[in-house]
Image 1 (spheres, helix red, strand yellow):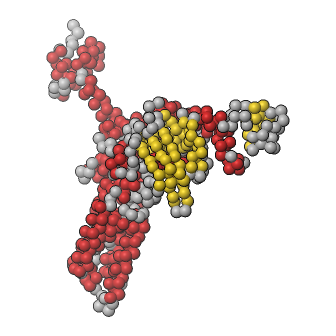
Image 2 (cartoon, chains in turn red, yellow):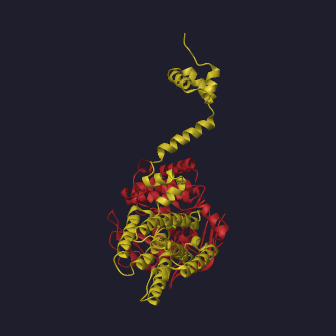
Image 3 (cartoon, chains in turn yellow, blue):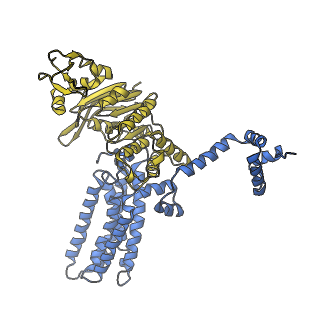
Length: 285
Length: 274
């Protein structure tokens, strides 16, 4: 079952084409969007969240076209959205802010709404901070507040733009736990710079660059793109496209094998770097 | 001999059909009598208990509401509307104080400089315009992006906030107008311009960023009043510019703006002016 379908998407901002013919599909489970800065991930997620329309191309969410008023409303009733830079009314407490968004999500019955607000704050581990003003919360806690509002109403489709940015390792693990639970019976589309998140969470991954998608498949398929090109050696391999010293003191190289190197299994990150080619290596260097 | 609550009395207690002294007495007994507690458990309506527990949980988990929302709720506004209004940038105390300060300054100037009345009547309608422009929109409301993706119609939210901002600013402007020297029709001469500017700005905002729309309308208003003042040079009087001809023209502007606004209101739902 495909809940999200985008084909030939074009979105222009002046002369810039943020999306330049991107195509995308997502069904139940977690789909990860990977790509360098400016690849078009955020624009694509905004289009999916119905906060922005396409200049060209076709989009269907739950089989509905967000260009139509009724269809758009129906889509909005079934989705939760966490923007990349969620804004807050900083004088609100965490509870008040999530309660405010719950009202925007048509939850007007006070008791039911408060139960739901309490539920999502517990789900993101903020039950102890619900009475704190947003302006007194750390960056990581604010992101969890933003995630909590996206979970309101148990939406069928969750669109999360870099949800793990700014989270510490413990918070990230907790996030993964929440997502893996939700991903069992929801559709989740998330963008991230963390290939570990993709490897740990996603059943599908789409890699974007320059407004187009370069790859679509499983994380394992992405990793396999670097099969035979990842090596561990005692010395830096000067002929490799990327070579860095690991914590264990050996060098991990992508590209040409140095003398005496041991070939190792590639990771999602290796596959991603291989896919992006020289552009990624310039950025990584 | 151990005393127990009769089945009949327990049933009435479970139905909330006993008076307060009886209820206190039964509850005191239940604290120390396990068999009666067990009997009571069997009689309690599970749905009722869940509803009561949910209400208790709701009261405990929800932090107390702020003073602004409390005032609105006491005025009869629904709690959810009060929360939507509490998030309105141009209903913050600092904004309202700034509006009051500008009005007081305009009143003071009106009494001291030539054509001061004209200055007051030009400025007063622009304050509601600024308030409405700062009430909702991309780059104005920090939660705009989350709000536009939510099912509540942005147009409805805009109207709720516009109404509140208009009510607040118009009330302040009216009080300021009462301070003007010489109480006459001019006290209300800014009202229709206020409505015309706000509705025109909202109509334009269906096609452009709300701040650009408000800026365009404000410049047009200054041009209109400035041109009127220039034409009336030498015999300048507020009545010449804000007289019945302008008031009728403004009514036409309001009607045209409202028609456009209603026809194009779906523009607020698309979020493309970010």
